[in-house]
Length: 348
Length: 129
Ligand SMILES: [Zn+2]
Image (cartoon, rainbow over all chains, first blue to last red; front, side, top):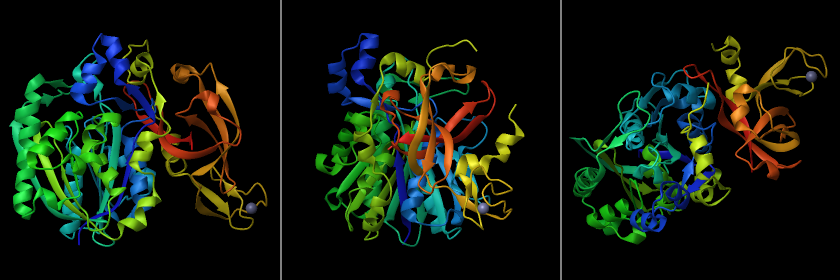
């Protein structure tokens, strides 16, 4: 049996409400909340980045997996906000967690699906028998340009998954990826904020790729939506995942637990992975989980998981996502937020 | 430029690696060569507990240049559950909420940047539980 043997998630404590961003730009907060189903989002502290978020999520994954960190043979971090252009985030993470130095490390990039990419490769290496354990992480501290629609959603957080073959808590039954050249969203090297093609980001990008990946995954597995207790999709806003889920045949109830975006925002590479972590926090043995990520550019990775008896032994060994989402919040106003996100130009 | 000391200190900054005196069990953090209690020179590697409480603290309202934009912030002496003590910043907090005896845990955070193009330097900070 191959799959997740330990998982962990992490969200910063800082938040900003949609109202406070809307007020800054003279936008209609209620219309935004209705239209996007977004209420507030996480904001990283001045001392947080993709590396620190990854370390805390992976620390929780190790606590749940209860394995010797030295046995991890590969560490992959997927993000579109790696702190260094050249120097993989994982080099710092392994030293922080006592992994390696006999370990394969790489950074992945694929807009919002870099995290599921890392999970897929970690899983594949274990399944191929190359190593006993591999760690795949999706984390981001994403930025939206001031006043841009993305500013309401771009947030921070991440989730980490240790793949293995013994004491599996969620077996991976099937995977399927779907990718094409779609210029919906991009960021050129040295640019601070990403660019996107407005409405082009919906139908030909997000919906097409998730739908095709999801549909093929169902066909491959011979399963139907009602076979699943939970479904989670990439969450750029509150609305899109509900629409694409419905199109694939999933109900609101199946999507409820993983649908954390209204209070978290879009954590990019961490989005569907944190949704999966929220599901594992409550899933019962035997439950099936359907997950499809999306990354602009564009592509989707689909996974079918089946939860095992082991889940009950590990779930309380580390912080749970909903607890982090609901508790210890510190609200920022727009000025503080602009400072935190380094949107204010300072003298050196 | 990054100091060689930052790199040398990675085990203690990243992983809270100290030393435990094999004679009297004194926990030295940062690690030492001679035990201040029994003068023994024999230590075994020891990972500090990640949870503890605030022994004493101060609120920094005028920070050094590098941290001047982060004020007010809290610097505290923490006593960890295993008795070891260390000085660190208390992050993610309303300074008014910090109190003597408050329970904290240590997390991995960025401590400073070496200018605009230099290295990011990481280490531990405390957050309130
Ligand atoms: Zn001693």
